Image 1 (cartoon, rainbow over the protein chains, first blue to last red):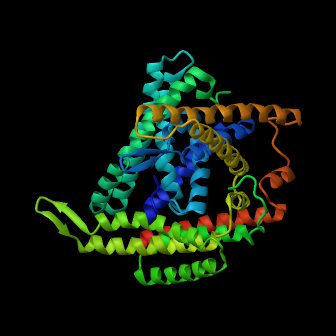
Image 2: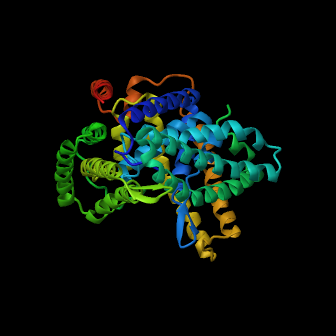
Image 3: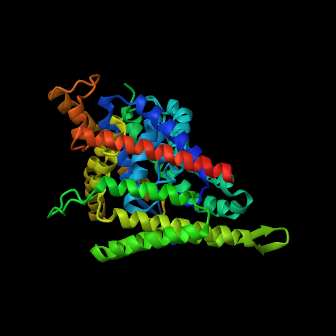
Length: 204
Length: 255
């Protein structure tokens, strides 16, 4: 989910970049030196996971998993996704540099919300049902929140004129939300069974 | 992003300058609202892209990236020039004008960025960004993520190959979702175990988590050849931020 460069207005770009810098600063403050390799490895996993495709109808959707990344990383999802978005902008032209702050806010803020709402549900004694619900919740909060934020920023930039674009953008992300929710649910359930400490990796 | 290239490509020239120029060009063009200036920006980007296409051996890849950018532009043209109301679908001249303006801006920025950054891989981008005055932790995170990406991509390809060898083909059903989720979970477990091994290896080499690294170590990690260059880059970055804010504030006052 990337907004392209040149779409948002200057004030929206400035405000979202400032908020994103704040999020990155909080995330970096909460990461100590010894946790950097782990955060980088988890960030790399989510970067790699975004290349996984699930066939839906005649096409296919790729995973985003920003909600699951938030669940695991907390505020550290801001610096980790910042790196991922920077590389995507530079290497693949997904998003862009001027819109990096806005795209980071769109992707990372729902992740942080998913962390605060759901991380209590996935302790070592979580049932399979709880794990499945928390994982599905990550998909709904992650993608739903991102679509809402993108819609909000577009509305602030262009008002009523972006209305149809926002609806189209939201509809296009419904299959992504379903895929992220389904994969997230089974991923969390597998982790609870296989390696519960992986669900709170940065707890020191 | 190939982890084990057969022959090392030549290192890109002036990577930090090119990345900084790409960021500056993106910022300035994002703030432009006059179509005449945008056409000038587009012409500049087209010139850079022509040079990149001339020199590059991956012309199709560069053109495909322009196509990716224009998929979003196509979404704009599908929605902005039309307005849905109780009277049905009506054409909107203002919407058409905005779609045209955004198309110019988006394409101009894409041409500048692709033209400037062609030939730079993830490692070069990571080193260049780390050298542009990022805070120490961010620079370390960036270089480590670039490093681990290729490792984990290899792991994913290995798991993928093993799954396909056993007859797995992704479909839109519960079984495929479970298998792909297991793949993601396995990657996360793989990353956790690797992080544990890295932690042990770091402590074995005398790493103390709460001791700030010495400046020369920081410079080496961030890929900065000389401390003075790092300071100059930090200053340039600060000047860029300040000038962007001033241009933005001026723009706000004018409009």
